[in-house]
Image (tube, rainbow, N blue to C red; front, side, top):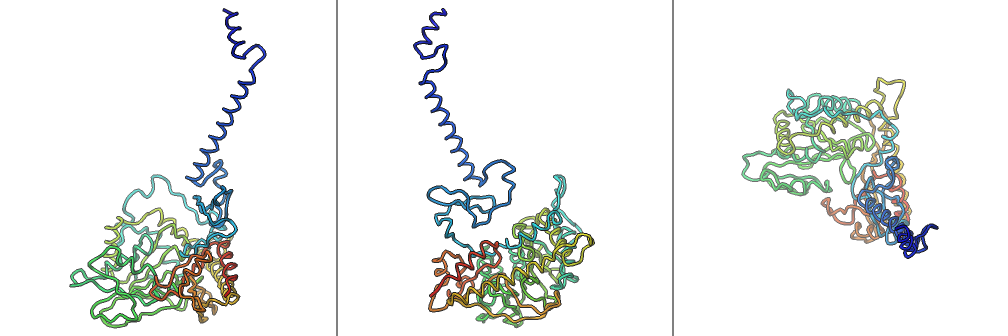
Length: 458
């Protein structure tokens, strides 16, 4: 038997001396195939999740939208948050997307706050639908309401004492709730909804999205002549051009909704305490936390507040408690940073001073770039006294309302040709020589935009 085995081993190339070259060659092929398969599966996971490496590596700070990792032959992989996107444009000349107002400029401030703005929510907490059943808005968290009133008092931008607070999933839901609450249910035709051009580009689509029989978009308030009830939307400071606004129509039968999303000291002087019947605010533009999806309305009339609450109840059965408590902590941190903190041993940088410094610097850069290019123009603003800062300051809006000069009729297309994405004036009810540009992106994105805009010459 032993001789038979030895003979078979000799035929196979296996002997007492070890493997033959053939088996070494086959082993090498199998090892290389295994390594290639491992790399292939890792690439699939990377494209699906945007992550490579260990959990410790995944915890590293995210790269900016204009940072690029290792790139395959045909494209660059741009890291945006936790996702990866393949861009055929390349590293040296990426597209700059300033179409939307994503307020990531404020990230550096909140990083500097560390745990001051953090909360911990245990798994057993906040499980009920109800927050405060004794309150008209029964899904409003009491702590969030307290911090809203505190911040308005600290800043002095709105009167909240004799108003009901209605919380919503961003100001968009509150806008829809307001239209529902203010439109008569027994009217013979839909209530007209108007706003002075240039108006917020989403007003028409949001108004008509539900195809409601209660209300309907009716266009520019400047040209509105229809008789009967109407709702006028007053955005101040205005999105897109940054100017302070008042109602345009001013006749009987009209109802006003004041969108004050940008009435904060980092954007504009706080000249008075707003005291309107219905005022809309949002965390996204006041503190930069767009992803929290929280807004609030200050509503004087109890019945209007009740109807708004009913709309949100039917629409989403309330608003996330987790988001409300996070927003409450954020607002508390902002108020504390304004010198109204019990923690005198660890004073925080003033949030609004940080924001105003950033916006001032960016507007100076933009105006310099416009002068160097010679192909564009910008609005001019008047300095005013700010009650919050105690200083005379210039407005620095969250968006730049840029106009292409020199016979350029489609400014959006022109800038797209230079790989700068903006939003055309036609979406705001005016002509296409204008575009809206976000001033709130990260530093690296904004600086690249300034560099590119400066280089556009006639």
